[in-house]
Length: 554
Image (cartoon, rainbow, N blue to C red; front, side, top):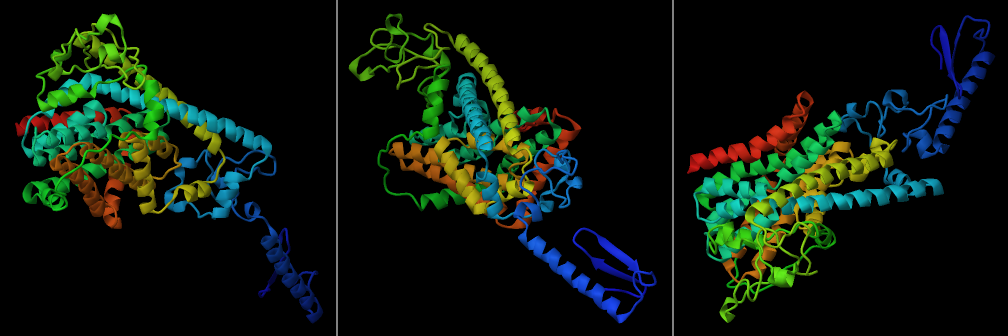
């Protein structure tokens, strides 16, 4: 391997270059043959050594390595491979298209090959993560109950009458934003249609609005990562990709429904002659979380339904709260009177307002008060809302900290390989999780911190949230199964096919898929200019604009 004036030959540890005119080489045939043999032997040695190196030696290691002076490398610029590891100083500089591909063997090694000390740390970290995750879910449940207490009367009043399409859309959004649960809103809408309090067409517009309002919760959760600008940017983008997708779907499907009533006709063709009575199903996560949150505050959803269906004119009909013989439990406070049997409130049964007692345990929550007025319950709801937000942000910061420690030094190739699943599989995962927790708000709220950390890419968050949209329609379908009215089932089916239609429009075609992704990234970048962007966004998008539209539509 030589040129006119120089001969290069490779040895295992260095590259040597000798001038052809030097005393090392006189250009004799014997000397040329000697150096050519060295070159061939060196190439063979290098190839043999590379083939026998372990994966972590020959390629990018799955954990942060040390350099020659034993200091831990914290930048991809210091690594021969140029790869980024979780916790690097320049972690935020790597773009998704720059992340290399890993093998599933490397993922398995990073996951399962550890010594006893490392397994001990993993066990402690997993227990800590589950602890904070549980109380994070408790805080979400408590926040939802507090929102129902504070906004239940208003939400029930908003949904009580047939309205024009724009008003129906806005009312569905506002009601969901007020009570922080699209599952509750859709089940109430289905019940209203089943009771013939509103028409099927109005119910369709209401569930479209509920789809928009459901994403307010994870947008609030994203603000828990305000301490780190990069995390806030990613988390806010991960939360708002849900908003943008829902808004884009409504922008196309709402006028289409107003003009053609395609959802109405599609679902009408699928209806059976009758619907049998079913049983209410409660997800396993709800069974784990609700008992603890229920000891603090339990909202009375019947108040919202009764106001919406016109059984009572206002929340004042439920006050003051009354417990028989002054005993605070479900039997003496919340058991319903049998009017057909002539039972009277205060004599044969008690009365509860926006805060009720738990039927399963028979106990009343800590914020329940015998003789409470509507104002007292509002104060209790406000206090619980503040407590739930405090608990939510504390648990969120602790959970993020635990995850950061567990992932510190992990190669981005490994993280990306483990989380980068096929879009359809991601949708199925999102759907399954939402069915289990019975709330798309909880699903997206739990995933948002992972996006903020960079563990889940925005491209993966989108199909997960689309799956959550599908999963949340199951609640409405279950509510319809309890009713014996086929119109209730039709509204539940409309909710399902509305979400499916949105997915068909915005996800399969790459150029369409980039629209919500780019919009979410733009909103995420806006947080770099000001950290007031998330609260302003929530107030404007979920309350100011809907109220303006409601006023104009009236």
